[in-house]
Length: 380
Image 1 (cartoon, rainbow, N blue to C red):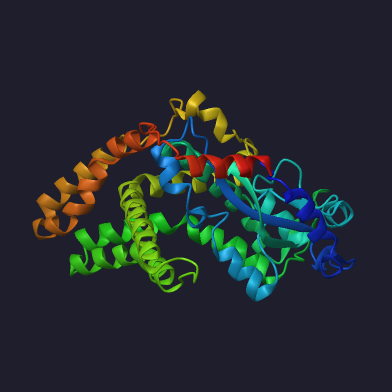
Image 2: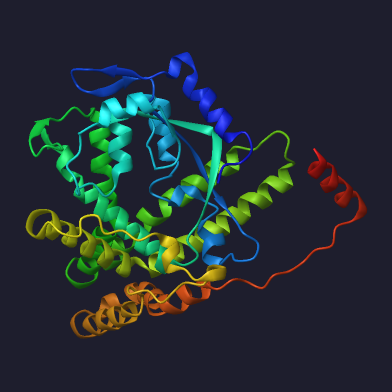
């Protein structure tokens, strides 16, 4: 969704002389300026169909691996952002950089490669909006598709890459672009590594409490850093009491997000393994279904209720019960350490179903001053 003046601002930013793309004919990619400008992606909320899940996770773009705040770091340090599929592009530079560049029926996650060849900039002061998935099930399907797409372009980490005519050429991508591709692959393996470390710590390694706390630290540290930064960065226009209340509310929401992520950790790990294995089979063996893709909206019914999807969290309690039984038989001393994790995994399906529902809608009466203010805003 384009808010008022967003298109005009994108055009003006793209046409600024310092942002005009400079094309390198030898490497056939944009080396300065920008062929693509990516605005900030905000979450749009519809009052008639918001689920608890969308309200819990949709308000924080930092949890979305394709719109997370680290892109600001790339832009600030290297003058280059990450393209996530929404924005404006210079037609001539885009065509020059990408014409006959990619093998047909091979690229699923095209955004990152397009932004690497045409050079993408991040315009954070311009914002567009899109809906957030209304349930974990739909969101998990979207993330699985992203993982498949990321692993399908893993070949672009090598010195020679495929092109449209079936031949290969020297890889023209910059070191920063190679790092972005690698970082996406690394991120997809995080749930697998965390689950593996927990199981090793509980079943085989000494000091199971230490390994559990280490995994917990990996999950909690980003949240704690964000809370500290939010506490110290107070706007001079906001009273201290209101600032602290807002920080406390955000902290509670981040804690709830982290608890739900822990509850879904086994499924996230399995989903990553499945997506990576499918990609390997399709790329190197079957060469079929490489572009298999279904829009998230297809999996959602009207008013934000999710359709019955194939992958669910129903297997997670069985996994938790199996791990608990193994610990009881093989290493009872580690069972109290694992109890909290196992309890969250046992209740994961109930949490997912509760979050997929829309909360009860309340209403609040406006006084005469508030109503007059809103009428004035509407007139302007």
